[in-house]
Amino acid sequence: MEDLKGRTVRAGFAQIMAQAAGLLLRLVSIVILSRLLEPADFGLVTMVTAVSGAYALFATAGLSAATVQRTTVSDEQLSTLFWINVAVGTALGLLCAATAPVLVKFYHEERLFWIAVVVAAGFPITGAGVQHYALLERQLKYGAISTIAIVSQAAGLLVAISMAASGFGYWSLVTNAVVPPAVSTLSLWAATRWLPGRPRRDSDIGSMLRFGGTITLNTLVAYLAYNSEKILLGRSWGADALGLYGRAYQLVNLPTAGLNDAIGAVAFSSLSRVRHDPARYRSYFLKGYSLVISLTLPTTIFAAIWADDLVRLVLGPKWLDASIVFRLLAPTIFIFGLINPLGWLMTSSGLQVRSLTIALVIAPLVISAYVIGLPFGPTGVATSFSVAMTIWLVPHMLWCVHGTVISMRDLLAAISRPLVSGIVAAGFTSLTYFALHDQLVPLLRLIIGGSVMVASYGLVLLFAMRQWTFYIGLLSEITGRPVSIGQRRADSARHRPILS
Image (cartoon, rainbow, N blue to C red; front, side):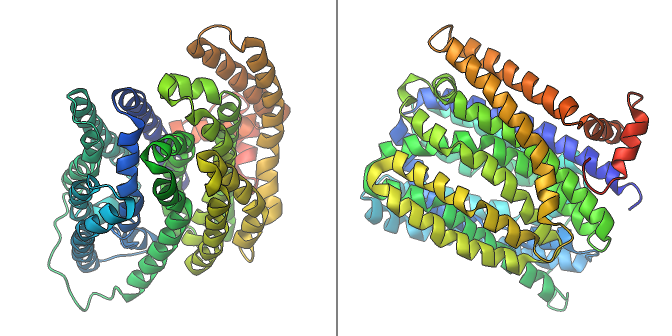
């Protein structure tokens, strides 16, 4: 516990580096596969994964989080949970295969049958690695976790690109449902070297099952809320429209999802360890929250301003119709950056029932927004979604922090400095955009625009907003060595409950 802070920061850094590598792999995948395949290929697979993704939420049954959240867990409990995960994964695989005829009839597309059957094979494979992953999380071994994630993703990418180049079409995308989980599970077993025993009926896992069940239901509701538009678009507008929207949605969510995955897993594990120490809990959460906001905001601004060039460069010329959808969805990058970390707060402090209640309120709100925008196609859905999430933002934040050690004032203090820095940087970046519009090639415009964005945002945030000491402190924790520049100020800053 004494070195928890340093281990947490170093684990978080390892996760961020891994997510950066993963982001690069996903970008490579998007760039290459978008040029090798057609929008309809992506649309076909999305028709299946929009439904199978809901099943995938049950693959862990929330039992990975339950294992991490518990202060102590026995080998008997782990073994029992392992066999539960395997049984759940097998049942989900059978359910996914049984859904295949329903999808064919719903979308009027016969090719979906075998896509769904192949996707089903990934469920039992994933279930066999859930508790091994949780063991590594409990020990904050995010170096191993990160390596496994990158290797698994790279293996899936290589297979997908090889198949796409060989003319297998949408089947190259389907392989990602089987290859990465298989590589990941085998690697997790090798990394932990833990072999499960037989399940025990008297292993006292009732509270863990209830915790995991609530987490799973919460995740399911949120998934349905944020993915039902894909089902609606596929049914009403077809595979091409869904392919365009799906690619734009995936691209716009890359930074937010990657960052939340990187910091969120470490934050949840560490916050669970200190949840009975309010001062440390508050300090850890606010520093993690500030880091997420400071990285998310410039990404949002850059994506909104340079949407056309980003889509043209990453997806290719045939995807230009997706650029308007990408720009309309850009505000959600920042909104999810603000609200996703609040999930760490509620789950780690045992407020998972409140989190579920909030999800049950969000779901009808965003689904209603999708229905309102659906007659106008992908752009209408994107606009309605962004507007709905903007309206919901403040009530969501107030509800999450109510009765916790974190106040709304704390959140506003964490947001204010990156926000002011972002507004200044947006001005400079917008001027650069208009000055370079239709000049140079897209790559050079993006490099220049990105350089202006990073420089202006960084200078204002670090110096004008006096956040230099915060990042010096983080660097010191990552390296495990004191940093000489401004050391006294950095030491002082690390002992403050919130950022100064």
